[in-house]
Each structure stands twice: as structure tokens, then as C-alpha cells.
Amino acid sequence: MRGAPFGGVKVLAGVVTAAMAVGAGTGAAWSQVRPDAPGSTAVVRLHEPRITPLPDTEWTDEQRALVERYAPEVRIGNGFRTMLRVPELVEAVMPFVLYTTIDSTLAPRHRALLVLRAAWLCQSEAIWAEQAVLARAAGVTPPDLRRVAEGPDAAGWDPFEATLLRLADELYRNSSVRDEIWDALAARYDLYNLVDAVMAVNETTLVAMLYNSWGVQPDESARARFPADVPYRLDVPEPEPPLTEPRVAPLEGEGIRVRRTFARHPEMQAARSGQSGYVNRISPLTPYFRELLILRIGWNCQAVYEWAKHVGSVGRARDHGLEPERIAMGPGAGWDEFEAAHVRAADEIYRDGIIADDTWATLAARYDTREMMSVVMTVANYRLVSMSLNVLGVQPQPTDELFPDVAIP
Image (cartoon, rainbow, N blue to C red; front, side, top):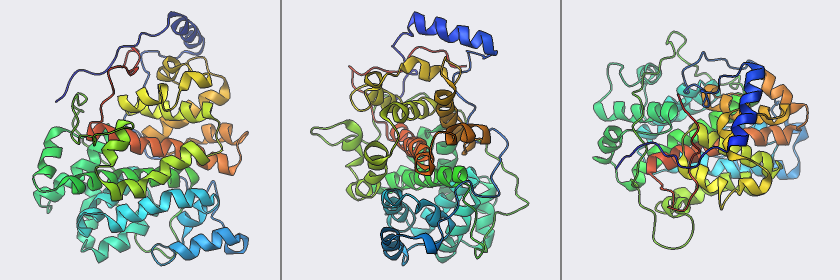
């Protein structure tokens, strides 16, 4: 069941007045409180790394142990070597990468199509190069690879595979999926398949956000490259109103609804849990900036459950000195330069799949490599969570604080 967009917390008059005063001085347009939709702007990707892959000669014993653990299953290439600079990040991300690309309940061909389409949407040549090898082993032919880039309307897809690509397109653009797509997949997929299809797209999007912003380049030995003559095109219907009932009901019992919803698929949840664990318990970012990034990406994705919990009992945003209404108003709402760079980082990763050079430079002037990598991981992880919450229909509780009443054009 669907309903009208969520709202219900009035913007504080003092906050509005201060923010509008700042906007008046800077020429900000206060009706625009969300960035443009993903895939709606010209794609700009780095041609050299911002964070260089870690060479073998610099590996510690801990890093060598991680290489030995994952070498039988993944290419120890530029992506892995870059992530290796933060060993805890490898341990957080790699189990879910392996699950979504190798071990999930989906047929290998379906899994490969979803991963490749998400890589194309995010314009991650590094992921495309890595995953094309797995895709060929799963029966994805060279003409199929070209059709993945062309999209779901390309000639030659069977109807179900075209629907899988539309799932990826809608998730990337709208952070949600229309009933028509969900129902078409549910006619053939069971609960585990449905969740795994969503997570294949969402995890690939997460890794692409990391790779794009860190500047991970395709390995020199990788032969697969994007079809050079296929233009980037994303044609997606407008999103439907938010769900007002869950598509996947949470398990009965104690604990927050997102955990009880993901627990419907225990194997998936076990593989995924380390990512949020890194952000919330291991990352060096302060709670103030962690919750600022999480709330801004939740707002951009219009994930009301995510917003409610990080304003409320999970993130306790106000306890850390944040005013959620200002987060909804965007980077010009009276922030200092460093704070505004965090808001812009969440906006740019959402819209463009990469932090822009100016924003990166502002953050990197005060953050070290570990902190910079953690900024990207925080936004990317909670984009995954936000998209998942929207699609599965995880509902806030009646007592939760919902979105503020800030106009969205």
C-alpha cells in the first residue's frame, strides 16, 4: 500500500530565518533542498587515483593475512589494494561483495546482469572490468555485455531479464522500485531471490561509490572495458509514493524493524552486517559528522525510516549537536565550510557517484586517508541501506520523528 509523502515535523522558525539569511547572501535557491536525481548529470570520472593502491612492499602482516584470505576468490587488483589501506574496511566490505557476486541465491547469469548494469549506471570501469570475467563464466556473452550497457529496452532480452535491468535502473535513479517491477519479479522469485536481487544492485552501487571517489582505475591486465560507442542513457519512470505497508514484513520480536526485516534472510544479513558495523563502531569519524552524512544521504534517498532512526534512537542526532532541519535544507543552510563540505559530499555521491574535486580538497585539508575513505564509506553504506529500506517497505513507528516540512520542488 502506498500513501502521500511523509512529513510532520515543522521547521523551526529560527532555523528557517537564519538559513534564509545565509541563502540571501549567497544566492542560494531555498526551494531546491535535494540534489538532482542520480544519472541526470554529465558523467565525470577520475583518470588517476586520489588514493593510490598499496604496493606489496608496504603490506603489514595484517594486510598480508587479508590478501591470503581473499586471494582465492577475488582479484588482488587496484580496488582491493586501495581498500587494503584500511584493513577493517576490507573485513567489513569483502564478505558482502563475495555474497552478492558469487554466493547469493540468484542464478549466476541473473546475478551477473544486475551487477554489470549497476556498474554501468555508476560508470565504474573498474567494477565492470572485474565482473565481466565472472559474467562470461555465467553465460553472459559479448553481445549480452553490450546490451547491458544499452539497457532494458535493447533488442534481445527476454522479458524477465529486461525486468531485472529495470530493477537496477529504478533503484539507482529513484532509490525505490515501482510495484510493477516488484510484482513481475515476485511472480518468479521467492523472498530470498527478491532480497538478493535488490542487494546485488545496492552493494555494487556502494562499491562503485567507493571506487569512483577514491579514483580506483581498472587493472592494467583487465581486458574488459565499457563498450566505447554506447552512450549513457537512463530512462526511468517517476517514483511512486512511498510504501505505507511493508513488502517484506519484519520478524516478530524485539529490536528495530530494519534488523528484523533483514533477518528474514539470515545469510544475507550475516554477510552485510559488517558494513554498518564499520561505519558506526570502527570508523574514525566523529558522531557529529557521521550522523550528518547519514542523515543527508537518507534525506536525498527519501528513506523516512533511516531519517527517523538517526534523528531518534539510533543516531541521536540532536544529542551530537545537529539540527535535522538544517540537514534537509542542504549545504547552504548556515554551515561552516568544513560542515558544508560533508553535506556536499553526500549530495555529490548521491547525484554523481563521486565526490567533486573541490569538496574532496576541502575535506582532505583536515582529514587523513583513513578518514577520507571513511567519509565515502559512510555515505555509500547508508545509500545502500536507504535504497533497501525503501524497496522492502520498512515502516517507521507512530512515535518516530519523520521528515521536516521543507519544500521539495
